[in-house]
Length: 294
Figure 1: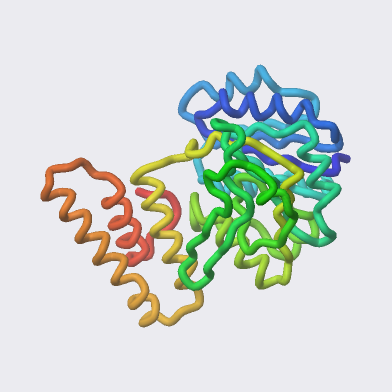
Figure 2: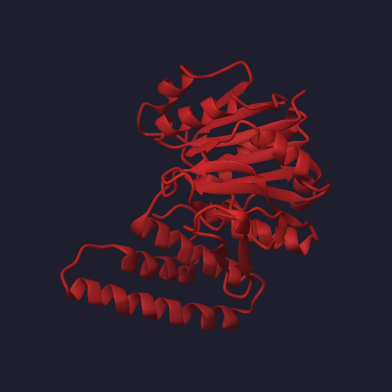
């Protein structure tokens, strides 16, 4: 049985996915299976991906688009069912260095969760993610090293408080202890929620710069949709366990600010955009609407 299950989800981005798969077939460590999911793409992704499957790839096309968390949970459960001791969640718009898997496995401390150094695809020597910091009170995260040139400043292994789930290595025992991704969120902030749960469980998070991937960045959504989900889901995370009065106090300023900015956008005759996303995200949370944006 494979030691590592690499979970990759595709949505209308088969060209990026093929490039990612090709980089994985060049890995120095071969003790893995790829669990490739298509999240009900509306283009010809399924047909295209079927032409690039290898013996170590399990292809699971989904009939309904259920969001990032749900589709990755399908992959994680399959990896555990197949006996994998590690699950590696990997964005489809990435390319991995040949020793990427080998380095992560060798350098991840026992019982810890880890991530590699993540660089931009273009320019390839510029940092996209070199570990992160999470403010639990606000739900906000900071990417360390963002847009800086790679160099000695980003060559040190270190513990961090946030790992983006663009790429994360999870030990089997951690998943069995902490659980799967929160499907209520649909997309965005799943990693924030999971990092909070990891911290609560006492699981350390490590940034391992000797392992490297390159990330296209910005391929999952963008603009209004991104702002909508991030606004709504951040409110959801920061209001967990709070009283109804505290939830209203936390939500109302965000809702009013979003409404004011959206009203100004309409007054200026502009199209719906990020201001609408912020307003609608806060409004839907206020109404108790989670999952996919209607």
